[in-house]
Length: 104
Image 1: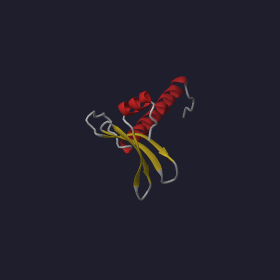
Image 2 (image 1 turned 180 degrees about the vertical axis):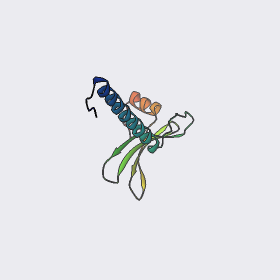
Image 3 (image 1 turned 60 degrees about the vertical axis):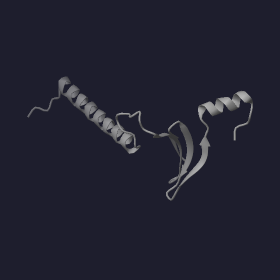
């Protein structure tokens, strides 16, 4: 029984290992995208989108959600969702900045 490994054997094992790790990373990325509620193919007709999520505790999150053209900041716990503050539209923010009125 010959147990001598050639350079070709090492390269074959190395490329096989890299291929399997690449498949695992691709699978993990796909599962993460599906878990976040976004589809793999983006639909521009969606009215509700999660823009950003920030975990502030083990079961608490702060989410920035876009509904149509309005962005809203929401606090999420295991029991409830609470609107923290409505996010102003871009046109409202630019008008308030130009007129010098403070934002609510």
